[in-house]
Image (cartoon, rainbow, N blue to C red; front, side, top):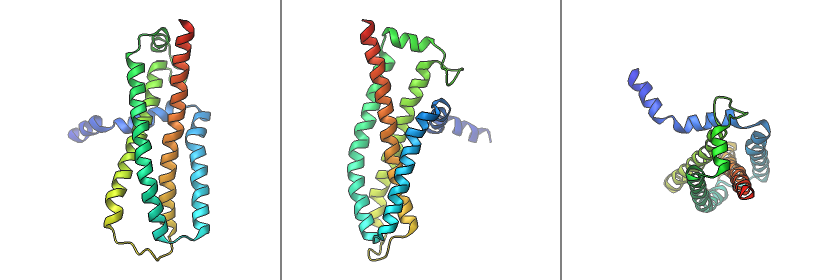
Length: 191
């Protein structure tokens, strides 16, 4: 049991980032980051289900989306990692202030820590999405698919979940860009 606990402690970083994001994000941030992508994914699922697509069409679209998604997810992950590097190594007045002030959302943490949670959670989402993309590149060509069969609700749901994950990575990245912008702009105004 002790070794299982040590294993969990050594490998729970992605889950701790999701939990940290969930605790630190405000209700309005969660609505934009999770609610809007949820509604869009449901609308896409409804549209695809009503259109009665064949399985082959959905798989073709998924492979096409997957190639594009891998490209932009890699770019977003690189941007997020570069942003963390800029923020973590900055010695500006605003960063020092963020390191010293307590967070309103998480009283036990500093504002800088909460900002890092948002950026790290974004990277975890992006790497998780890249992982799913790579798995689908490997799995889709290998499994035997009858392309003439009407797409099932399960296939449409899986595709919609994939859209949902992609849209979450985009909305969280946009919010992180906003945070980075305000930190850099307020730093420039203080000079």
